[in-house]
Image (cartoon, rainbow, N blue to C red):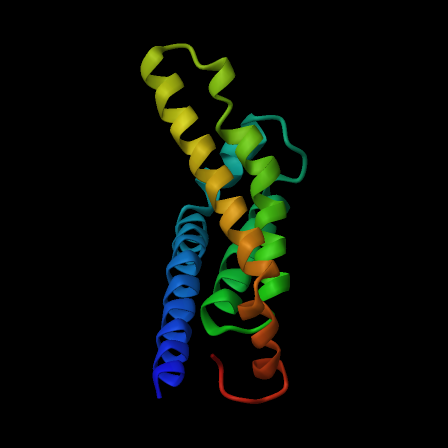
Length: 144
C-alpha cells in the first residue's frame, strides 16, 4: 500500500509539474495571439524576415506544445520542440550583454537565466520516465 500511495503522489506531482510548465507557454502564446500586430512588428523591427509567419509559428508552437505538455500527449516531442524554440528566442530577446543600463542588464540577465532553467526543465521532462509514460495517452489510455 505504501508503494501505491507513493506512486500515486508521484503521478499527481508529475501531472501538476507538467501543467504548471505548460501554463507559461499557453499564456505566452495567447498573449502573442492577442497582440499579433505588435509581436510581428517587433520581429520585423529586429530585421527578421517573414515576421508574420514567424509570429504564427511561435503562437502555434507555444499553444500546441503547451497543450500537449498539459494533457500528457507526446510529452517528449512537445518538451524538445519548446526547448529548441527557447534557444534562439533567449539569445535574440534577452541579450543582457548588450544592455545599456544596469537595470536593463539585470532584467535581461534574469530573463536569460530563467529561460536557461526552462530549457533544462523541458529537457528533463523530455527525457524522464514520465515522458515515456505519456505514450499510454498516445495509445488511447487515460493520461498519467
